[in-house]
Length: 169
Image: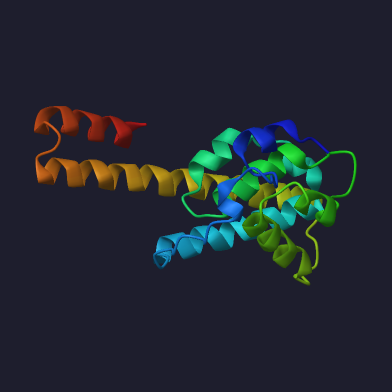
C-alpha cells in the first residue's frame, strides 16, 4: 500500500496534527448539488473497492479538484493512490492510512450490500461519473464568474470573453 502521497496530502493519521485534538469545525448544510456529488462519489468509491484497477486509472489530483464536498474530495484521491490494481482492496488497511472522517466514510461504503458490477459496466459508470463532476465544476465556475460580473468585480468585457470561452470549450 502506497503512503507517500497520502502523507503529503495530510490524510494519514499523525500525532502531530492539531486537527486530532481540536474540535471539528461545524459544517454548513450541503446544497442539493453537493448532496448529489456526494452520492456519486460514494458510488464511485464503491466501484473502486470492487474493482481497484479502476482507481488506478484516475489521476488523484484531478479527481480531488473536481469534488467540492468533504470528505470525498480527500477520500477519492487517496483511494486512487492507495488501491493496488493487482489485489483486492483491504478496507481496514486503507482506513489506517486515512484521517478519521475519510476512514468512517470508507467503512460505510464497504458495508453497503450492493451487488458488484461487472468490470466493464463499472468502468462506464466511472467515466460517466467523472464527466458529471467535470460538468458540475465548470457550471459552478461559470456561475461564479457571472456573480463577479454582476457585482462589478470583473471587467465586463474581459469577463464576457472568459465566459464565452468556457462555453466554447
